[in-house]
Image (cartoon, rainbow, N blue to C red; front, side, top):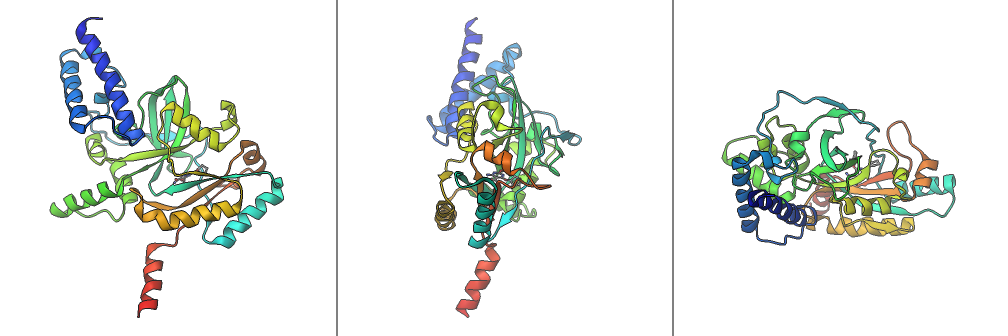
Amino acid sequence: MNEIEQRIAELNKLLHEYGYAYYVLDKPVVEDSVYDQLLHELIALEEANPEFIYPDSPTQRVGGMVLEGFKKVTHETAMLSLSNAFNEEDLRDFDRKIEQAIGKNYSYVCELKIDGLAISLRYENGVFVQGATRGDGTVGEDITANLKTIRAIPLRLNEPVTLEVRGEAYMPKKSFEKLNERRAENGEELFANPRNAAAGSLRQLDPKIAASRNLSTFIYAVGGDGESYGIDGHWEMLKYLEELGFPSNKEREYCETIEDVLAFIEKWTEARPNLSYEIDGIVIKVNRYAHQDELGFTAKSPRWAIAYKFPAEEVITKLLDIELT
Ligand SMILES: NC(=O)c1c(N)nc(OC2CCCC2)nc1O[C@@H]1CCC[C@@H]1O
């Protein structure tokens, strides 16, 4: 390898490590200025030596082409939705039904329900090859070019595995506020909430626009059955996804009983405003895959999971108004 090729390899390695720490672990290891300086050095070296451009180089995240439209993608395994619970009684009903079906020795995983849009990412031998929206659960849109601009999405995994994962793409609250400030200054229509802003950004035909929207993601499942990875439940699966290099939400908890679930919900009802991203509820999943298989699915959602939804904001202000007047 000549010294230019060596420097390009070294810059790819450094920028991958720094980018992983910043965007996936949310724990920067260098100043932004250092990252930018190295990135510009890599851009210059790649321009002068295009034969040494790595497919997973950070410079390859923002494609040049503006698309005509989005291709349709049929998901290998359907992307399910979640049935909802709105209060403690709904949650205890959910728990009772599970106990009736599979007996007492089960536990839950509780996760924050990220208020973004569901995405599916496909990797072949560890390389990101295609990403799509959920669509109707069976057919979504190919938004690979836009998803590549999300720096939390690894272009190459730590293992050369071929798999499909699911997650939620979202826009952090601060990015949403700054975007709407800019749009107000330009007399443009404002986005109603971060979910719409994220969806609108990923529907852009020009990847440069998506790249400017500072989107992120949390990955929470593999497509297909988890057992085929030799993993016995969801809690282990989330750890495996992190080992592969995916960002997953760290606020999750392993809950032995429905009481623990209710305590988790209590905690995050309180702490929700302190999060840097919007959540619209809590997702509760039976942990063991063997139990999930026993419980199965309804037409559109699993019997082994439920989404507890926070009361909508306006309901709270109405209640407050009544009390205050
Ligand atoms: N929005 C989320 O944070 C979230 C989550 N943490 N976990 C799941 O689990 C899937 C897998 C089984 C059925 C739903 N789904 C989520 O969001 C879903 C995607 C489609 C509808 C819900 O928003």
